[in-house]
Amino acid sequence: MRLLLIEDDDDLRGEIREYLLRRRHEVMALGSAAEARRILDPAQAADASFDTVVCDMNLTDGDGIDLYVEFGSHRPACRWILMSGAPDSQRMANERLKHPALPPCLVVEKPVSLRRLAELLTTGSDDV
Image (cartoon, rainbow, N blue to C red; front, top):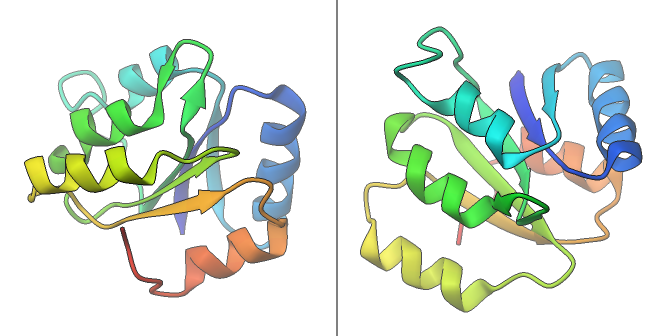
């Protein structure tokens, strides 16, 4: 599975990346919304296809929900998992209503165990 991980906490990003690499996933790990925009923008990175994007909702330079709304419809086969210590489920539900063409997205409350995150990647869990 090819994954894009967007997490601004260096230690957590490294821990998640290493765990997923050991489970034979291909992981591109980024630390900011700006980096993610460069990778997800179809005009700039046409060859960057991912099966799943795992993204922190509250990045220091942006918002995971904004990334999902901005780029989700460009990659309809890509699944999204958004993580947050305080997820804004109502905002997420509202965005899904406003943008019905968005691909599946699961909102996960942090802290999430690495084992649970790996399970979410391999199961077809329900989206928001």
